[in-house]
Image 1 (cartoon, rainbow, N blue to C red):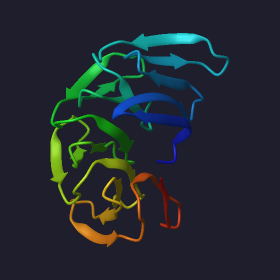
Image 2: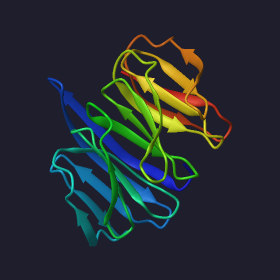
Image 3: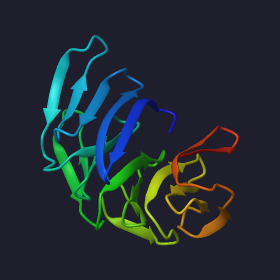
Image 4: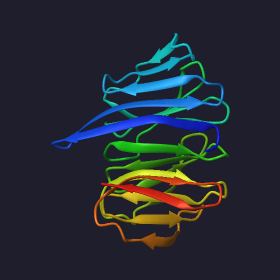
Length: 196
């Protein structure tokens, strides 16, 4: 999504315990940090504290910001929270059975989640499930969406899948020989994958 610059995301997996730290910057240059202390912080560009969200009860793994400044966070307990730009909870989604590893938002405000339950969920702006994709056979670790609403997923099953806006598989890429941790799409629709 053009308004979101992923500045830093670092994950360390030790004995299947995920420790995460992340930094997301939106187009207004506010910074959003997440941590295994279960907190999400909003800072200005000088590093001054603006607000703190403590509504998760487990490690926060991923965060994203939409075009109007709403903030989305996902946790190791499988929950996704949507906050307004002042850090107030708008809704929470609990439809996953395991940790939600990545979130991304399209230009219409739809939310896409990638989870260790091997599933991808599309939620509408109100946090209601639109569709569920179950075509992967292992953890879904990366997710991206292009400007036409196509969804790209990366998995521990070593595969990349492209889905249409209704969640139907368009193609599958299987040339990686190890798990794929992240995925990105450029403005021309080219897909970039990062594998271990």
